[in-house]
Length: 154
Image (cartoon, rainbow, N blue to C red; front, side, top):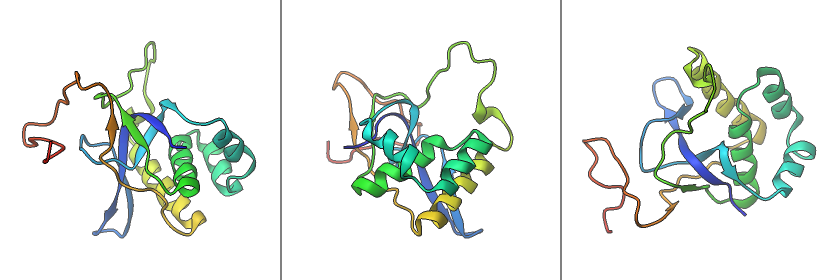
């Protein structure tokens, strides 16, 4: 019943400029999984197409951005559960892509805007934080030098 995939991302409250921020920093905590390398039940595609708020679908279509954020909002709203990250990978490589959306200067501003718009439309932020990751125990997580472990009790 969840969105499962990678890479993980999270939302964070900006105390200086009250509002939600989209964050792609390497961290143990996440509240979203990008849909480029994710899977979910096909019923969520039906809900996205026929049940999701029209304001959100229109924004995504017009800006060609934030469809993954919209899907995370939808699934979290329906299930009241966070996504599950798989693998130790932090990025999704796009073979043969000449440029990435995330390389554009305005990319993060657009994603900040999406989270705040979707929060306004839903009336709350359904995204939930988690540290859950499902992968083989043979993988080792590569963390920044200042972070020792994601899981203190393991």
